[in-house]
Image 1 (cartoon, rainbow, N blue to C red):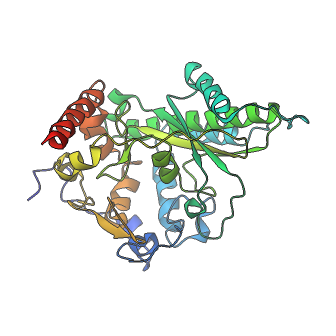
Image 2 (tube, rainbow, N blue to C red):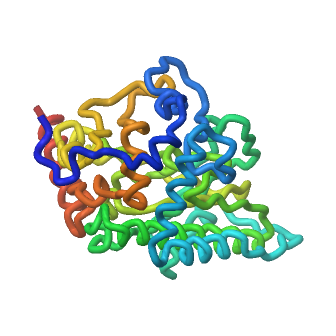
Length: 328
């Protein structure tokens, strides 16, 4: 039995319910499918008219545009995403793979982002109908302001998400421009609108953390409170390895985000999704509350790993526990 929740029961606005399609978002995502297939775009389509839940996506825009700051923040994000890039230099700079990857530290040091990693491109990460010819994915992470995210589901948390997507997009564009100046072609993939790839799998592959029960990546340094962007390129970066901190086992025994979720969209156990057993968020339950609260964010805000200074201590504790188990 879930704990008392001030946002329950939740009844969606009728202006939204009339826009709910007959097609389940869980079916589009592949919930319960035993065999692998590449993902389909279920939300955040660049053209909402191309997806079944497009009218709900438009409702989200309508609701948030009624609040001061959202339209201006989105316009700023679009301006950055559409800004022109420098031309590709005619002579590519040559470095060894480790040297290329070391160069990415400059973007963390300059404050463009808080995290950066590299994965070899896996064609399984591309959305249905998309072809990605590049061999490398550079993944960028930018951190939310924890105190602002704690206000979720108030609109202030939603505005913080838009601001960080803007930062993430700006970082991806800057890295892309830098690669052009180095003589290498590159393509920025900025959120939240769906691009050619889904970004969580490469972020997991390059060491950003582990998938949490709430469907977001949990990182020991940043918790679950960060956003992603990416850059696709053939520059020969050395991949950064995945990391395991015991977070998956922690989530099995933690119910904080489950109890905090107003529409009860989080499951106590993993689900099979397109042939993979993983943590999964019930799309059909989540999205109506998400839409009416400008992006919600409660599960990210209440996650113990998101509290500043907590994650690294938790990771160290879990590592000590794992060492004791292996010793016995």
